[in-house]
Image 1 (cartoon, rainbow, N blue to C red):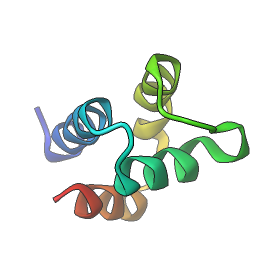
Image 2: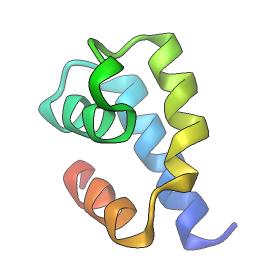
Image 3: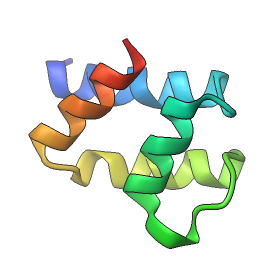
Image 4: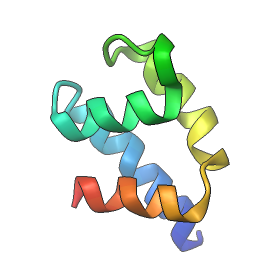
Length: 67
């Protein structure tokens, strides 16, 4: 597994376990945009699909938020 994939998995894992954290809310709002209201199972599924599409710089900033 490459670093990018590992970062994506760690971000999704963090958001899944810390749904109400400021970092999770910020990440979901940036990735999902206006349709994001709160972190739930559907949001986690969307995050898994859309996070790999984020550019390297944005992904790095999300990773930094959770560390």
